[in-house]
Image (cartoon, rainbow, N blue to C red; front, side):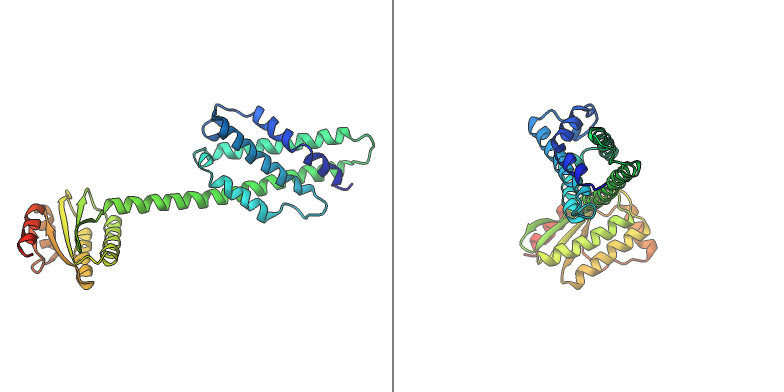
Length: 280
């Protein structure tokens, strides 16, 4: 039997599907589904209704399955929606499966509404299979988009953390301060190296104070990274000075054979700044 009858039936039920879905929704679950804000609820219903309008096209005789490009826009809008981002992934997937059951029930309702025997078991099996496969395709596409969004957010957060972990403070035109606070591992040392070189180059810094008074301990690899940072800065024309070196750090440098003989070193940042003022 042609899908046209079922297609017409489902297209006429899109708003019913949305209202039935929201009415049976577990509103105690975490995230977008628990909102009591009227505007958010209306937006949620509109998003759900848009899904049904698109999903019904699965049975459109003039089209061959779901329209991937159109559905991709809907999926991307949901994956990027702030309210859905704050909703547990498992809750969203569960709603897709609830929607799948809705469609299976609607197909049963349609079959019962047809007076003649034109609908066969083969037709019913085919339609049910189309529903299950269609929802599976949507879930897979959403999962990929959700991961893409999650990766983007994670990378943005990492970038922010890295920048905050090595903040460069502008003291005067062409003069800046890099206060290093907390433990430094190899990863943070590398990020500090990349971020500092880029910032000094972009802001035309020619003098950089590096203060290590907030660093409790540095291992051999990190000490080498700091020394490489100073060498890298020198290559792009930035003069550096160190302050706040703890005895443990100095000891590590000596054990590594790293010489700071040609780098201005001060006991405190205050002394470094005073010395700089004397040279103006």
